[in-house]
Image (cartoon, rainbow, N blue to C red; front, top):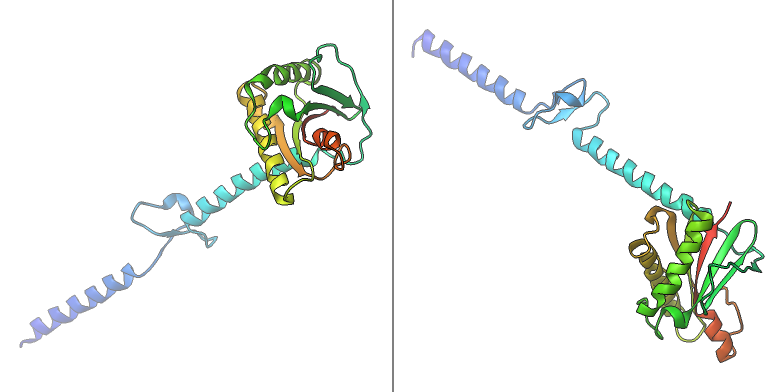
Length: 219
């Protein structure tokens, strides 16, 4: 084999080795905007384009969670002393209104809203919920609303909490979809058998405890 052939083979081998080496390298760019569809780009921050996309999605989720928490943390009725209130626009049987300077709470009897052990709003409840929505829109437009679900102490504690949660969600959905209350202003909370309004030792007391309340934060 002559010297020319050996020289050409050596040059080809060197070129092939250099090319293979380049394929193993990650293209290092100053910004992620230099990316192409077939190039893995790593910015000088050490993040890939996929990392940045993931971080952006996490930021959106975090913002949404904080917004929901802002509404949730705005309500604290545990120590509120509420007096009976009479509004002329609220006059149907089964609806009560209590309030103070911070909250107004519309209470709805279980028999108005639901059948026993059910969480589907009865068609006959539409008028009562419409009356409550109209009162809230008239007096407290733009204020945050929370639907509170309660149960009596009969049966399993977790079942009672789940039922009160489902009922609160059902009323919220009705207010938003049927009565057109802004969804971002309405939240829910389930108490189950906690915070009874009356004694669970009697049928009358248990009936009073099975309820849904619609609270408005006035201030």
